[in-house]
Length: 270
Ligand code: DGL
Image 1 (cartoon, rainbow, N blue to C red):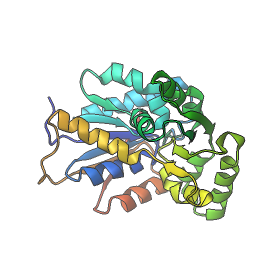
Image 2 (image 1 turned 45 degrees about the horizontal axis):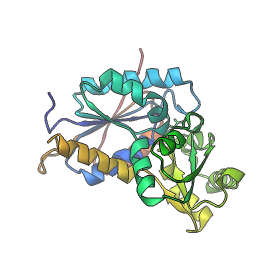
Image 3 (image 1 turned 120 degrees about the vertical axis):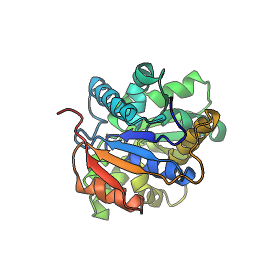
Protein backbone atom coordinates (compact mmCIF):
# COMPACT_ATOMS: atom_id res chain seq x y z
CA UNK A 1 0.00 0.00 0.00
CA UNK A 2 1.19 3.50 -0.75
CA UNK A 3 1.47 6.38 1.68
CA UNK A 4 0.49 9.95 0.83
CA UNK A 5 4.16 10.80 1.40
CA UNK A 6 5.31 8.38 -1.34
CA UNK A 7 6.75 9.97 -4.49
CA UNK A 8 5.18 10.38 -7.92
CA UNK A 9 7.14 8.52 -10.63
CA UNK A 10 7.59 10.35 -13.92
CA UNK A 11 9.42 9.18 -17.00
CA UNK A 12 10.42 10.18 -20.51
CA UNK A 13 13.14 9.42 -23.03
CA UNK A 14 15.16 12.36 -21.75
CA UNK A 15 14.55 15.88 -20.69
CA UNK A 16 11.16 16.49 -22.32
CA UNK A 17 9.31 15.01 -19.37
CA UNK A 18 10.97 17.59 -17.14
CA UNK A 19 8.49 20.10 -18.58
CA UNK A 20 5.67 17.94 -17.21
CA UNK A 21 7.50 17.29 -13.93
CA UNK A 22 7.90 21.03 -13.49
CA UNK A 23 4.15 21.60 -13.95
CA UNK A 24 3.45 18.81 -11.44
CA UNK A 25 5.69 20.38 -8.81
CA UNK A 26 4.14 23.81 -9.46
CA UNK A 27 0.63 22.49 -8.89
CA UNK A 28 1.65 20.09 -6.16
CA UNK A 29 4.62 21.70 -4.39
CA UNK A 30 4.63 19.24 -1.47
CA UNK A 31 4.89 16.15 -3.64
CA UNK A 32 8.13 14.21 -3.89
CA UNK A 33 9.01 13.00 -7.35
CA UNK A 34 11.29 10.40 -8.86
CA UNK A 35 12.05 11.30 -12.47
CA UNK A 36 13.63 8.92 -14.97
CA UNK A 37 15.04 10.24 -18.26
CA UNK A 38 16.24 7.46 -20.56
CA UNK A 39 18.94 9.60 -22.13
CA UNK A 40 20.92 6.51 -23.16
CA UNK A 41 18.15 5.59 -25.61
CA UNK A 42 16.76 9.03 -26.56
CA UNK A 43 15.20 9.84 -28.90
CA UNK A 44 12.48 7.23 -28.47
CA UNK A 45 10.26 8.68 -31.17
CA UNK A 46 12.01 6.92 -34.03
CA UNK A 47 12.57 3.61 -32.19
CA UNK A 48 10.40 0.55 -32.79
CA UNK A 49 7.24 -0.06 -30.79
CA UNK A 50 8.89 -3.10 -29.16
CA UNK A 51 11.90 -1.05 -28.03
CA UNK A 52 9.77 1.75 -26.53
CA UNK A 53 7.61 -0.81 -24.74
CA UNK A 54 10.69 -2.54 -23.32
CA UNK A 55 12.14 0.75 -22.03
CA UNK A 56 8.82 1.81 -20.53
CA UNK A 57 8.20 -1.45 -18.71
CA UNK A 58 11.74 -1.55 -17.34
CA UNK A 59 11.46 2.02 -16.06
CA UNK A 60 8.11 1.22 -14.40
CA UNK A 61 9.85 -1.57 -12.48
CA UNK A 62 12.43 0.92 -11.25
CA UNK A 63 9.75 3.44 -10.24
CA UNK A 64 7.73 0.79 -8.41
CA UNK A 65 10.87 -0.27 -6.62
CA UNK A 66 11.08 3.35 -5.42
CA UNK A 67 7.52 2.99 -4.03
CA UNK A 68 6.01 5.51 -6.44
CA UNK A 69 2.30 5.98 -5.69
CA UNK A 70 1.44 7.02 -9.26
CA UNK A 71 3.27 6.60 -12.56
CA UNK A 72 3.11 9.41 -15.09
CA UNK A 73 4.19 8.61 -18.64
CA UNK A 74 5.52 12.08 -19.49
CA UNK A 75 6.13 11.14 -23.11
CA UNK A 76 3.75 11.12 -26.07
CA UNK A 77 5.61 8.40 -27.95
CA UNK A 78 5.39 6.02 -24.97
CA UNK A 79 1.81 7.11 -24.25
CA UNK A 80 1.00 6.29 -27.88
CA UNK A 81 2.56 2.83 -28.09
CA UNK A 82 3.13 1.60 -24.53
CA UNK A 83 0.31 2.98 -22.34
CA UNK A 84 -1.95 -0.07 -22.71
CA UNK A 85 0.93 -2.46 -22.06
CA UNK A 86 2.17 -0.49 -19.05
CA UNK A 87 -1.35 -0.44 -17.61
CA UNK A 88 -1.60 -4.17 -18.09
CA UNK A 89 1.80 -4.66 -16.49
CA UNK A 90 1.56 -2.40 -13.43
CA UNK A 91 -2.00 -1.04 -13.49
CA UNK A 92 -3.20 -3.47 -10.81
CA UNK A 93 -0.56 -2.09 -8.43
CA UNK A 94 -0.41 1.60 -9.24
CA UNK A 95 -2.36 4.25 -11.16
CA UNK A 96 -0.87 5.12 -14.54
CA UNK A 97 -1.50 8.47 -16.26
CA UNK A 98 -0.49 9.31 -19.81
CA UNK A 99 -0.15 12.62 -21.65
CA UNK A 100 -2.52 11.93 -24.55
CA UNK A 101 -5.89 11.50 -22.81
CA UNK A 102 -5.81 14.83 -20.90
CA UNK A 103 -5.07 16.63 -24.20
CA UNK A 104 -7.93 14.88 -26.00
CA UNK A 105 -10.27 15.87 -23.13
CA UNK A 106 -9.08 19.46 -23.50
CA UNK A 107 -9.57 19.51 -27.27
CA UNK A 108 -13.08 18.10 -26.86
CA UNK A 109 -14.12 21.00 -24.63
CA UNK A 110 -12.20 23.84 -26.29
CA UNK A 111 -11.79 23.05 -29.99
CA UNK A 112 -14.97 21.42 -31.21
CA UNK A 113 -15.66 22.36 -34.87
CA UNK A 114 -12.17 23.87 -35.19
CA UNK A 115 -9.11 22.95 -37.23
CA UNK A 116 -6.30 21.54 -35.14
CA UNK A 117 -2.78 20.57 -36.18
CA UNK A 118 -0.29 18.52 -34.20
CA UNK A 119 3.45 18.02 -34.30
CA UNK A 120 5.10 15.02 -32.69
CA UNK A 121 7.59 12.23 -33.14
CA UNK A 122 7.39 9.60 -35.86
CA UNK A 123 5.89 7.06 -33.44
CA UNK A 124 3.27 9.45 -32.07
CA UNK A 125 2.18 10.65 -35.50
CA UNK A 126 2.54 7.21 -37.13
CA UNK A 127 0.37 5.61 -34.42
CA UNK A 128 -2.37 8.19 -35.12
CA UNK A 129 -3.22 7.95 -31.43
CA UNK A 130 -4.74 11.43 -31.30
CA UNK A 131 -6.72 11.02 -34.53
CA UNK A 132 -8.08 7.67 -33.35
CA UNK A 133 -9.13 8.97 -29.94
CA UNK A 134 -10.72 12.06 -31.47
CA UNK A 135 -12.67 9.83 -33.82
CA UNK A 136 -13.60 7.23 -31.19
CA UNK A 137 -15.06 9.96 -29.02
CA UNK A 138 -16.90 11.56 -31.91
CA UNK A 139 -15.21 14.94 -31.41
CA UNK A 140 -15.89 17.18 -34.41
CA UNK A 141 -12.39 18.49 -35.10
CA UNK A 142 -10.57 18.77 -38.43
CA UNK A 143 -7.32 17.19 -37.39
CA UNK A 144 -3.95 16.84 -39.13
CA UNK A 145 -0.58 15.77 -37.77
CA UNK A 146 3.01 16.11 -38.93
CA UNK A 147 6.05 14.16 -37.71
CA UNK A 148 8.89 16.51 -36.81
CA UNK A 149 11.72 14.10 -35.98
CA UNK A 150 14.57 16.63 -36.02
CA UNK A 151 13.25 18.57 -33.03
CA UNK A 152 13.98 16.14 -30.18
CA UNK A 153 17.64 15.49 -31.10
CA UNK A 154 18.10 19.26 -31.46
CA UNK A 155 16.62 19.91 -28.03
CA UNK A 156 18.46 16.99 -26.36
CA UNK A 157 21.74 18.22 -27.81
CA UNK A 158 21.24 21.51 -25.95
CA UNK A 159 21.61 23.40 -29.26
CA UNK A 160 21.89 27.07 -28.40
CA UNK A 161 22.02 28.70 -31.82
CA UNK A 162 18.51 30.21 -32.14
CA UNK A 163 18.84 30.48 -35.94
CA UNK A 164 19.28 26.73 -36.33
CA UNK A 165 16.19 25.97 -34.25
CA UNK A 166 14.13 28.72 -35.91
CA UNK A 167 14.95 27.42 -39.40
CA UNK A 168 13.95 23.86 -38.56
CA UNK A 169 10.73 25.01 -36.89
CA UNK A 170 9.89 27.24 -39.84
CA UNK A 171 10.38 24.57 -42.45
CA UNK A 172 8.15 22.14 -40.50
CA UNK A 173 5.39 24.64 -39.72
CA UNK A 174 5.17 25.73 -43.35
CA UNK A 175 4.21 22.18 -44.36
CA UNK A 176 0.86 21.88 -46.16
CA UNK A 177 -0.62 19.67 -43.38
CA UNK A 178 -0.36 22.51 -40.90
CA UNK A 179 -1.89 25.36 -42.89
CA UNK A 180 -5.07 27.22 -41.84
CA UNK A 181 -5.25 25.76 -38.37
CA UNK A 182 -6.81 27.36 -35.30
CA UNK A 183 -4.46 25.64 -32.90
CA UNK A 184 -1.24 23.65 -32.92
CA UNK A 185 -0.86 20.88 -30.35
CA UNK A 186 2.67 20.23 -29.14
CA UNK A 187 2.37 16.44 -29.23
CA UNK A 188 5.76 15.83 -27.66
CA UNK A 189 6.81 16.76 -24.15
CA UNK A 190 10.12 18.12 -25.41
CA UNK A 191 8.42 20.84 -27.44
CA UNK A 192 7.39 23.18 -24.59
CA UNK A 193 11.14 23.88 -24.40
CA UNK A 194 10.88 25.59 -27.80
CA UNK A 195 7.35 26.95 -27.35
CA UNK A 196 8.57 30.57 -27.43
CA UNK A 197 10.11 30.06 -30.87
CA UNK A 198 6.94 28.31 -32.11
CA UNK A 199 4.79 31.15 -30.77
CA UNK A 200 7.13 33.62 -32.45
CA UNK A 201 6.60 31.85 -35.78
CA UNK A 202 2.81 32.30 -35.47
CA UNK A 203 3.04 35.83 -34.00
CA UNK A 204 0.09 35.02 -31.74
CA UNK A 205 -2.24 34.21 -34.71
CA UNK A 206 -2.52 30.51 -33.85
CA UNK A 207 -2.93 29.02 -30.37
CA UNK A 208 -0.02 26.79 -29.37
CA UNK A 209 -1.14 24.23 -26.81
CA UNK A 210 0.98 22.00 -24.64
CA UNK A 211 -0.24 19.37 -22.20
CA UNK A 212 1.92 20.16 -19.17
CA UNK A 213 -0.68 21.89 -17.02
CA UNK A 214 -3.60 19.69 -17.97
CA UNK A 215 -1.55 16.60 -17.18
CA UNK A 216 -0.48 18.04 -13.80
CA UNK A 217 -4.16 18.70 -13.06
CA UNK A 218 -5.03 15.10 -13.99
CA UNK A 219 -2.36 13.88 -11.54
CA UNK A 220 -3.75 16.12 -8.81
CA UNK A 221 -7.33 14.96 -9.38
CA UNK A 222 -6.28 11.34 -9.32
CA UNK A 223 -4.29 11.65 -6.09
CA UNK A 224 -7.13 13.60 -4.50
CA UNK A 225 -9.63 10.90 -5.49
CA UNK A 226 -7.39 8.25 -3.91
CA UNK A 227 -6.73 10.36 -0.82
CA UNK A 228 -3.02 10.19 -1.62
CA UNK A 229 -2.09 13.88 -1.79
CA UNK A 230 1.04 14.70 0.22
CA UNK A 231 0.32 16.79 3.29
CA UNK A 232 0.97 20.51 2.88
CA UNK A 233 3.89 20.61 5.31
CA UNK A 234 5.88 17.82 3.67
CA UNK A 235 9.35 18.72 2.51
CA UNK A 236 9.49 17.28 -1.00
CA UNK A 237 12.37 15.17 -2.25
CA UNK A 238 13.17 15.33 -5.94
CA UNK A 239 15.34 12.65 -7.45
CA UNK A 240 16.38 12.63 -11.08
CA UNK A 241 17.76 9.52 -12.70
CA UNK A 242 19.14 9.43 -16.22
CA UNK A 243 20.39 6.31 -17.94
CA UNK A 244 23.33 8.24 -19.36
CA UNK A 245 24.96 11.41 -18.12
CA UNK A 246 24.35 14.30 -20.47
CA UNK A 247 25.27 17.89 -19.82
CA UNK A 248 22.01 19.18 -21.30
CA UNK A 249 19.84 16.97 -19.07
CA UNK A 250 21.57 17.88 -15.83
CA UNK A 251 21.70 21.59 -16.73
CA UNK A 252 17.97 21.65 -17.41
CA UNK A 253 17.08 19.66 -14.27
CA UNK A 254 19.09 22.13 -12.19
CA UNK A 255 17.61 25.15 -13.97
CA UNK A 256 14.01 23.93 -13.67
CA UNK A 257 14.15 22.94 -10.02
CA UNK A 258 16.01 25.68 -8.16
CA UNK A 259 16.73 23.78 -4.95
CA UNK A 260 19.69 21.39 -5.00
CA UNK A 261 18.49 18.37 -6.95
CA UNK A 262 19.65 14.79 -6.58
CA UNK A 263 20.90 13.69 -9.98
CA UNK A 264 22.06 10.13 -10.47
CA UNK A 265 23.01 7.90 -13.34
CA UNK A 266 20.93 4.71 -13.41
CA UNK A 267 21.60 2.26 -16.24
CA UNK A 268 18.48 0.52 -17.54
CA UNK A 269 20.43 -2.64 -18.22
CA UNK A 270 23.86 -3.49 -16.84
N1 DGL B 1 9.31 13.55 -25.19
C1 DGL B 1 8.87 12.36 -25.81
C2 DGL B 1 7.56 12.50 -26.50
O1 DGL B 1 6.72 13.21 -26.00
C3 DGL B 1 9.93 11.56 -26.50
C4 DGL B 1 10.56 12.17 -27.68
C5 DGL B 1 11.68 11.31 -28.21
O2 DGL B 1 12.48 10.83 -27.41
O3 DGL B 1 11.74 11.11 -29.41
O4 DGL B 1 7.28 11.87 -27.50
